[in-house]
Every structure is written in C-alpha cells, then in structure tokens.
Image (cartoon, rainbow, N blue to C red; front, side, top):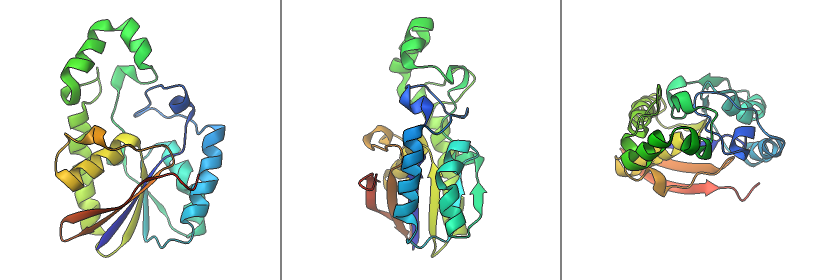
Length: 200
C-alpha cells in the first residue's frame, strides 16, 4: 500500500489578497507562519518515508522544519506545481474582469478548457500532475509519502485517483495548511482523511 499525505502550503500574502499565484511565488503570511508550526507539530510523530514539494518557495517553507526533524531530504518536483495563470499571475479575478472583460467571459464560458494567456488550462495542469503522480506511486511502493503542493494540484490528484477524471476537480475543498490522506492499494484509492484543518 502507498499512503499519500497531501499538504497544501500555508497561507500566503497572495492567498490573503485573493491574487492568482500559480507559477510565481508568494511569501508565507504571518498567519501562515503560525500554521507551519502547527502542521509540523501535527505531523512530527507520523511515519513518513519521503517528502516531495514543488519548486515554489511556499511549499518548501511549509515542510522545511518537518523535514529537518525527520532527517529527510526534500525532493523538489516542478511537475506538481499549481496551474500556470500566465499573464494573469498576480492579478485578482476582479482586476481581470475590469481590465480584460472578454477574457473574463471566456474563463466563465470555457471552464476546464480555458487556457490562461501564456499559461495553462485546468486540463493541461491535470494531465501534467497525473502523469507525475503515477511515477511517484510506482517509485514508492509500500511507503508513506508526503507531498506539499497547491490547492489545484491536490484537487487534481484526488479527482484523478478517485474518479480518473478532471471533471470533479471543484468538488473537493482544499484549504491552506490542510492535510488530506489517501491510501492506494492495487490501483484502488481510499480517502482516509479529507481537508483536515482541525489542528490549526
């Protein structure tokens, strides 16, 4: 069995101001720093064989102390990054609606298939993420793997492993600093814990 512990990074300044930060980075907020301490405390006694993060600083910072406590090297993986919002990185949807009304309407009309200018569509990010998680599961048989990544990435992982489709992406709520645990055996996935934030 492979156990996946999926951690969404702690709250960032961009999260607090509702700004799109996919491939750009955003600093952990003061509230997020407190969340990191609580995540570390919550997970410190749970057995973990390997820790993956994305190349984004916010994911590495979220589990850096935990990795040190467990004497585990953090494995950075760019394919687990959040969706790329392209030219709209750093903007809010309210700003997009005013500055790019036609694009905003396309976001609504095209849904999963909408590709951000010079960025990705949700389907693009889903395909990128699921290809990588298959490799990670194959490389970590009978192991417990922690992946610290992003809300969109975690939703992609869950909807893929449970339904083999991107169409349920928005059915899963993934809060900052939340812990979701999946258990996978012989290709069958069970949700053990979903979006747990009780410890923060």
